[in-house]
Image (cartoon, rainbow, N blue to C red; front, side):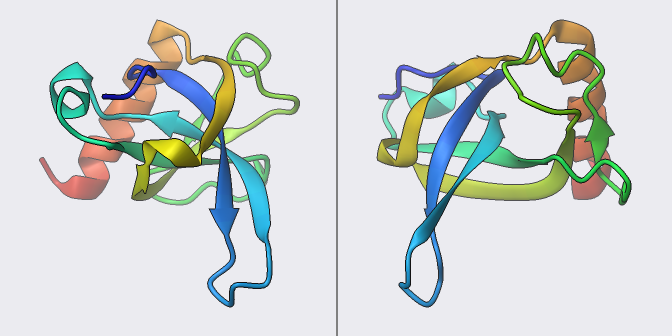
Amino acid sequence: MTKYKRQNVVLVDFDFTQGTGSKKRPVLIISGDSYHKNRQEVIVAAITGNTKRVLFGDTKIDKWKEAGLICPSLVTGIIRTIKSNMIIRKLGMLLPLDFQKAQKNIRKTMEF
């Protein structure tokens, strides 16, 4: 069971596919308590600082400082399931309005 919750912005250590290292990236936790109850994974949406290119499913974070991010950012439509032990630490939490917008765009990408 993870100690992190939906809406949390966390720092994750992603391994490169070639096995040549890793990169730390912020992500938004989108899975909820029921999912976390008996699993060791969390479902996340990638966050990027590349705000010049907004693609389908992406959401601009208006209150990025309050979410613990260091620069203007987007929640992307890139969804991934990760092991909870990949989480380094919590950076912050997306404020409700930003999270609602991100949820709406993620639903669009999943077409439900």
